[in-house]
Image 1 (tube, rainbow, N blue to C red):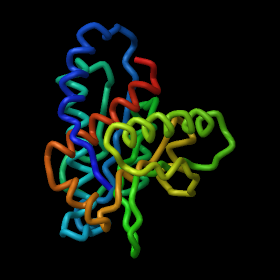
Image 2: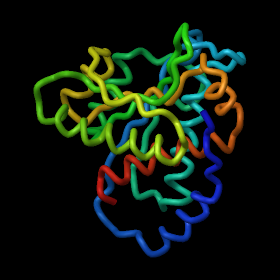
Image 3: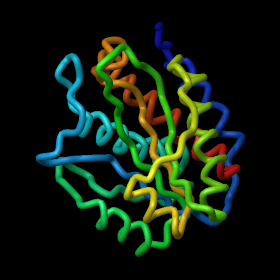
Image 4: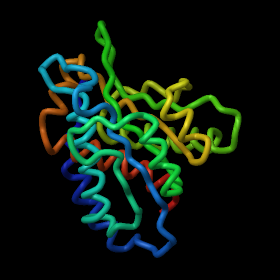
Length: 211
């Protein structure tokens, strides 16, 4: 697998946004960096920890929304540093601020050579789940096309954060890559690649919201 150099894409995006911005009521977004504190999540083949990768990505999403997208989205994180927040508290925050969208960030792990990005949503039979399919596809397509990751699809799972969040907003969980895959683990060692992943996820979100 060869992951792409995306610096040119960021520069082009900055130029296009000068002409493409519009003024709409801000959507409230919760970005949930998984794990944290004593819960490291998956440990990468090169020693990187899932909790650090997803926090760095979430913080970069927050920064890009401000610097490139002129704060068109009202984004909150469930954690801003290396702390462990309970799954229930993540859901309570999402409900309490009446979020329109919940997006949980994670890294995958496998005992084999698995690779790629996949998106999960809860299998509730409600309108939020149906809308979340479009949301998940938007993020998945943007990140795999722009970054060169394998597309593993949109899947259903009974994860607690998705089960609770999908009751009142559109909710997905994104596995941004396998830290047990040498190429993908090394990809996340570079700050510019964290930035690229953050931008891809954010563009998927903007595309879904038609902003």
